[in-house]
Amino acid sequence: MHGNNEPVNLYCTLILILIVILMCFVTFYQEKQTLQVISDLKAVLPTSCIVIRDCKKQQVPEEELVTGDLVVISAGAIIPADMRILQSNGLKIETSAITGDKDAYDYTHEAVTTYPSVFEARNVAFKGSFCLEGDGIGIVVRTGKYTVI
Image (tube, rainbow, N blue to C red; front, side):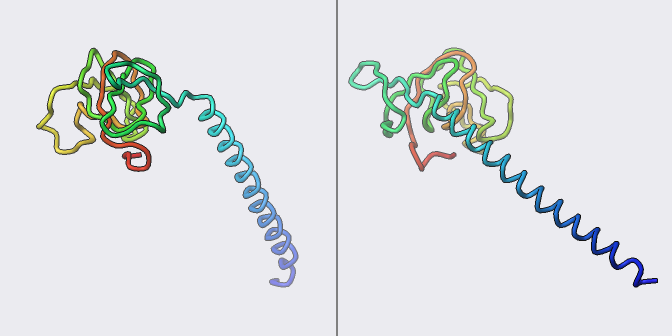
């Protein structure tokens, strides 16, 4: 009885191997397309921000930010570096890039001492967060590869 099922088992095995190989190629192709879309989106997104240097507002590329720069935050802007909020006016920031939480929180310039973690403090904004409402000013504390993300 075992001899009669061997060709059937061989065909089933070959079909399963072909399906697995095909799925690998499809997954690879989809990942490649996703990376291309992300790359295209990054090229479209603005990589500059408004900073206050020498008492003047000026447009500066994100790569030129340094610790101590004062960055103007406005609705619709992506936070360009890790920063401490110095001034806020109805500032709501969404932090899903860092925490995975899609809720927007009110951010303030006031000192916060009751939170156990800097990630829960509402006076520190991290690179990649998104400002949904309001405006404010923050001082850069970390840039480039030294940011949380």
